[in-house]
Length: 390
Length: 233
Image 1 (spheres, rainbow over the protein chains, first blue to last red):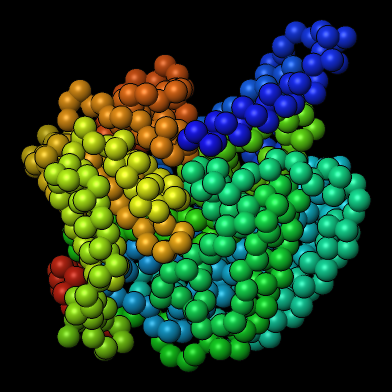
Image 2 (image 1 turned 90 degrees about the horizontal axis):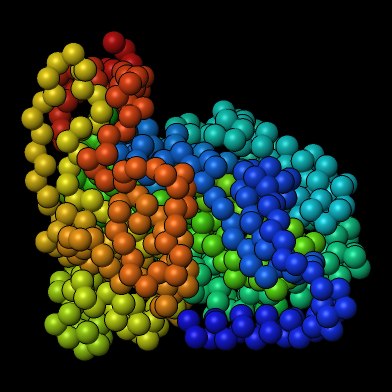
C-alpha cells in the first residue's frame, strides 16, 4: 500500500506544483463534474463523479450499479444449464467466452471432460469472441479521441466475425452454445473455410488500424504517457488481461494454466508492453486481435474428429464441492467460484468479472489528470458495463 | 471406471490423487510457519487447488503473509452464506403452506463454524499458483479490511458489505456500490427472498419439473439412450 500511496501523492504534488503559478493568477473554485450516466465514453451507464480544480481532476470516483442485475442471486434459483443464459449477458460483446469458465467449473466438479473436438471448437469460438469484442475497442478508442472513421471500419469488420459466430451457434451476441460435457451442435458445413477468409479480413483490419491510428501523431500525443499504471499497482488492484500486459506483466491465463482447452496445442505469443500508458493498452489489444486470428487459423486446421458431447446424465446434478475456474477473456480474467451442494442448481456462484477490478483502479489513475484525458484513460481501460455490474 | 468419464481413460481426480503435490503442500507449510495456530484448517486437491482457513482475528495478518509469500495478484473477495435458503428456489405454490426446509448450516472445504464466511482468491504470477483463503465471520459480522494490503479489495469489500451486511473495519469508504443508498436488507443472504420469483412464477420451471420416472436416476445412468427415448416421446 505504501508504495501506491507514495507514488500517488508524489504525482499529485508534482502536478500541483506545476500548476501553482497558474492557480495564483487564475484562482478557481473547485467544481464537481458528473460524467455520465449516459456519456458516450462510458459504454453504457457508468457515472464518473470528478472534482475539478480548473482542468485538473483532484478526485474522481466511478459510480456503478445502474445496470446491476443480480446474477449471483439469480444463479441460486436456476439449474446449472440455465446459468449459461445469464452469464452470456455479463460481457455482451464476447458472450461465448463468458460461458466457458462456468461450464469448465461445473465439469470440474462433475469430473468430466468434453471430448477433444468440443474442446477445440470451444477454443475457436472463444477466440472469435475475443476478436469480435476487441475489434470494437480498436475502433471505439479512436472515436473517444475524436476520430470518427475507425469505428465504422470496426463495426463493418466485426460483422463478419459475428456472422461466423451466428452461423455456428445461432446467436450473434448470446450464443448460449456451451453445454456441460460439450457443445450444443457441431460446426456447419463450409464454416471452416469461411472463417479462414474472415480471419484474413480481420488481419487486414488490424493492419489498417495500425497505419491509421497507432502511427498517427495526434493519437500518440493524446495517449503516450497518459494514465500510466505501474506494474505493482496493477497487481494490487487485480488488473488482468491486456490492461495488465500493457503494464509489463507477462501473464496470460491461456498459457499459464492447464485447462481442457486447445490453447496449449498451438503456437502463439503473449504480447506485453512495458509502458503501462493508454497507448500501450491500445497497442497490446491490437496485437492480441492479430494473434487471435492466427490462433483461429491454426485451430481450424487442427480440429480433431469425433463426438462433440460427452456422456452426461439428462438431469444434471453436480456433486458437492467447490471449484474455481478462470479464463483469459477478452476483457481480462473472468472466473467463477462455484459452490455446489449436490443439487441441480448451484448453491453459490461468485462471478469474478474482469471489468470490476479493471475499473476500480479508475479513482487512483484519474487523480491528477486533465479532463480530456479522463476520456482517454477510461476508453483505454476498456470496460463493459455488464461486466462491472453483473 | 467413472461412468461419467467421457474418454474412458482414468478420471482426472484419480490421477491427481497419485500425484504428490509438493508445491501446494510446501505452501501450507509456509503459511503455517508464518501464521502458526492462526491457520485453522486447510483443504488440498492435489494438482488442482488449495483452500486455507484462518482465524477471524488474523485476517489482515493473513493478507500480509500471503503477499510476503509472493501472492501479489488480488483476484477477488466475497462472502458465502452457508445457510440453505428457507425459500428453496422460490418455486413454491403460493396457495399452499410453504414446505419445511432444513436450514442447517454446513460449511464447505476447509470447514468453518459460522453461517457467514468471507473468502478471497489470490494468485502468484511468478509461480502460477492460486489459493482461496477463507475466514469465519461471527456476529456482529465484523472483519478487518484488506484495503491496506491489497488496494483492489476496496470495491470488493463494498460489494460484500452491501450484499451480506459484513462490516470491514478500517475500510476507507464503505458506501453502497450497486444498490441505492437507502436500500434495506442484504440481497445475497439466503434469507432475503428473491421477490421476482415470489410475484411471478418462473417460466423456466417447465424445463426441470416434469421428469419422467425412468429418467430420474439421480445422475447415475448413461445419457445416450435416455436422450434418444426422450426425443422419441
